[in-house]
Length: 221
Image 1 (cartoon, rainbow, N blue to C red):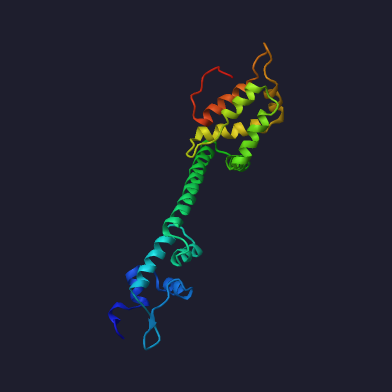
Image 2 (image 1 turned 135 degrees about the vertical axis):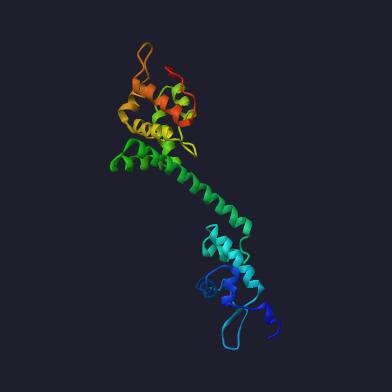
């Protein structure tokens, strides 16, 4: 066969690519890396193009690209840059989730939390952006205009890499915002000369901690 020195058996291709023979056979059967021909004995033979293609497949798979995505790249329906951009966003989201999980686990370890508290913290830290917005809007609704505006401007939200203190403050804050009794007190305000309810002051202190702002002792909007 002409150019036989540039053709590889599946074993040689495995050695050069660093992939297992069974993996290459799987990709070959799936049509992702097709053999360029057959030996006289009927064994699959691959060319340099197959080696390059396998290296790209391996890189994409290591980056977390699924097989349909790999196939779209190889079929030129998506560029490598387009796939990389999508998966970079996915990795960013995974990193944020892992950082949050790390902070929750450290808080659980510090508190010696039980199963129910762990479930509660996990649920509160996984609230979607829409759910977080709904909590803030519910607290602001019906409040004095200046207070409602401040609630929305200072809306608490966990950073991408929260500290244990921020997670603890967030969990307590969500409990407060979900408490209808607290909501009524908050929206009613202190009156002209009335004292500030301790829970309202606690709310603002927690907002400051969650948002990473300096806590001003004794200050309440």
